[in-house]
Length: 142
Image (tube, rainbow, N blue to C red; front, side):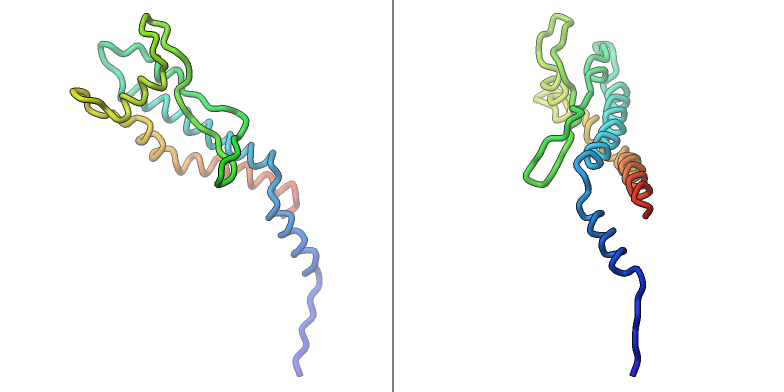
């Protein structure tokens, strides 16, 4: 009859249990790392796609994100968006201008700088979050 013995299995199971309970501060750091990458990409894409004679770069300069994650039905989230009000005589909120640029309107085709930037930066954002997660794992000697 065969016999199997293990050493350290209980410790490994305990460590894996700790990983399943990822601390909120680590989740926040991961989301912030992703948001920084995406915000930079959206700002750069806005500068590229929304350039022209009438462009003042206001939308591109207004892309930001909230540092504190929001709780959603699916977990935690950080939103990247243009924030503020234009100060060039056109008092429309910058996010409204960005919406019109993103989706277009009658007589103005869509210039999807947000979608394009999000797609282009997806891998880099994931890598940034993975680095934070890796530091967390290393701190647990895993």
